Image (cartoon, rainbow over all chains, first blue to last red):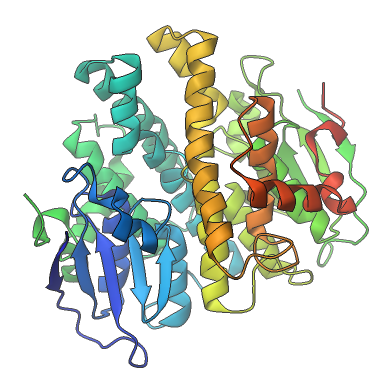
Length: 232
Length: 232
């Protein structure tokens, strides 16, 4: 049910255990993990789980055996099965500490994780495909109302993210200092989504500046949805 | 605008820096952090931010100075301001390592964080007060439809959580082994919410068993909404 490819990371995984990412090109949470893997220059295979085919391949029995939540992404590392994008990024940062994605101090880590939470907890879950489907199916909402819902929550989330970038002195070329962290791995996919739904970006100068900087990093560019083999 | 109390933790905070929690008795995310603070037996003050008074005290200028996202909880540790419940719990676990809330191995930590994500990313954000308000205000949905929405996402989230508890050998008297972790700090508040909205618990034997065990731990019981000074 899934197609397969080999990505072009430049470094072998720790020990002999292989890394395999189960994701979908346009999934925001998959995009986060691809950024983390690529920033760490890790080799990994990709299995493409098509969210719109076969009634959602993430809900098929063979995928549910891997991740009983029926959501992507999942990452296998040898026999270990990891789910939830934030947990996966934390795991990668612990097991492959080169090119860290969290700052070296507890206060900085708390800030980066809080920025992640603004997007991964408070923004993206409201605009997930399954939520938009529910709004249409159960409440009979037309596309225009669903799009308005989408833009409402993106605006609230990214407005708050922008204020945190603007008001907190640790912001740099990236969300926290000048090197990418987990916060950047959350931000860029959310900005990609915001642009897909034509959100008004005029109130987000820091977000736009950082996103442009990130998009120019080759490892980050390779993680972009349009550069995946399953993109349509 | 806020009332104040002193909690009865049994241990002083690290160094001389005081801990102050800004929360609301029935807020699920506040409840998580109270559990973490109490399990670590840390002393902390509480400021009560009433979500329903004054148009939402979390949106008043003095609170927005503390947390520009306008959400609770926030925790101050001396001059440090911490937001987002998952980030706050990670911070507490790093700065006050006694009574750890994460396992000692990377795979275990990934599992606990994934369980946290199922609730904090995929379940609770859909049922937040601001979301329920939006459904009523913008889509004109009556209480019965909003309650159906609520129960739908709780069921999907806790069904998945239950399968993870049932299928993964690390489950114990608590979500991961026999001692409480961050996953338990996320689970119990979500179960509290599920009961408030009269969700069907019959498919959740592991969740119900673990919740009953947790509720009997004195430090956990002290974190319950009904035991807060601002409860109504």
